[in-house]
Image (cartoon, rainbow, N blue to C red; front, side):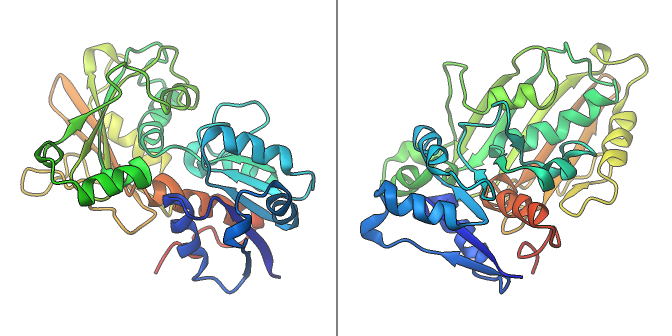
Amino acid sequence: MTHRVFVDGQEGTTGLQIHALLARRTDLDVLTIDAAERKDPAARARLLNAADIAFLCLPDDAARAAVELVTNPDTCIIDASTAHRTAPGWTFGLPELAPEQRGRLRAAKRIANPGCHATAFILLLRPLIDAGLVPAGALVTATSVTGYSGGGKKMIEQYETDDDARLKAPRQYALSLVHKHVPEMMTHTGLEHRPLFMPIVSNFYKGLAVSVPLHLSQLAPGTDGASLHRALSARYAGERFVRVLPLGAQQDGYLDVQACNDSNDCEIMVFASETQAVLVARLDNLGKGASGAAVQSMNLHLGVDESLGLTP
């Protein structure tokens, strides 16, 4: 059976990546819009309602407006924007979130694709909060190092054409302590307090690693690095795209942020001493952190192999 797919906002970074993944497929009919009609609501509405799957790769307000154009009850919307990630009636597009999440995605007609930083953070903490090792009331901090492609076309152009020496060094941002991924990070882990989140953009194209430091004395009694590692390993046993590396695994004393690039993989690591631990999750911010996650949710919704088009 051939399924019809439309990408609204196909010229953006995520839209282009989704198109590249869909181009590998023979089971999909990818609907296209003439360049002159990309901002024509009637033309977009026609294609959105003709699609079995409609990806929205748009700014938040434009994504909300696009949803209003969809009147076909059979069209499944997968929204890559921030607009609906904590909205009632929308299913969070992270299959590994919980054992029942895949069933929810199969049944959903409104799917909110997770943010890249949020994906890594949630995959680290949700199993530990569910297991009772990290209290829901914990005061959690996180740092994320990411490539500049996550900033979209404008930032990509800046890094690739501007000779400003300041772009050579890592740059912290969201210094107002407000970041658009924080609400989903809180909602989908079950944390009761906003995590203190510090993202850093660096002079490489893609790749992302989120680190969460923990004081073992503030966790459930008896929790150590090994028990954190066991809980994560048990939760992701058998998962195709989430792998827990051996406890303390590293290479030459450094962590390669770009090791999962060009894949839909997320690798999870636990480093620990007798009193502290650091959890790390790394992924491709344009893969598992964006377009790959969207296609994975589409595959689940359509009832095809979850990894179709996402593996070599």
